[in-house]
Image (cartoon, rainbow, N blue to C red; front, side, top):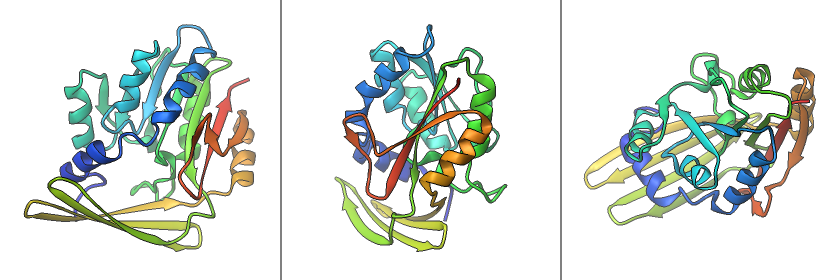
Length: 230
């Protein structure tokens, strides 16, 4: 068992899952461009950098951070401004006008704090962003239920088993690439939309609960938030 995203799992994700938010990209870029002037994006949990690259193509320059060295290496090889970092103690770069956290990033349980990173990131972003600044994130909701599935690629196989216990979701991911077999465990919080909204508005955000990113529906059992700084 090794890190959150091993090199093999990062590669599988980049090859097989980097189109998850394709239909959301135009909408997200437009939202950011309608925010504060001199739009600058900070993408937390940027993965292989697909969204950052698309955002740049649409006129939104930005940078990103990811916990996985394997993902950081892939993104940097694409010429993107990405570094390794932990959402639990994130620093929002000066000049940022919008923060995105796509793919349930803020639902992950930090191994040090034993909590998800939603509120620490929301507080850091609120402190750093200008009036009108935005934060978008999708989260695991209470209706995300146990399930299992298997996917295959040209030279890989992956089996995912999801179990749920109260407010905690555990995802066991087994990968096989050629003769290499690995297992990774992801743990995430299941958030309730109403209590999430109240907690975020206590920080000072205006919070909208979304069931999609514009035309792009979310995965089953997820919901999204759009935060705007007054």
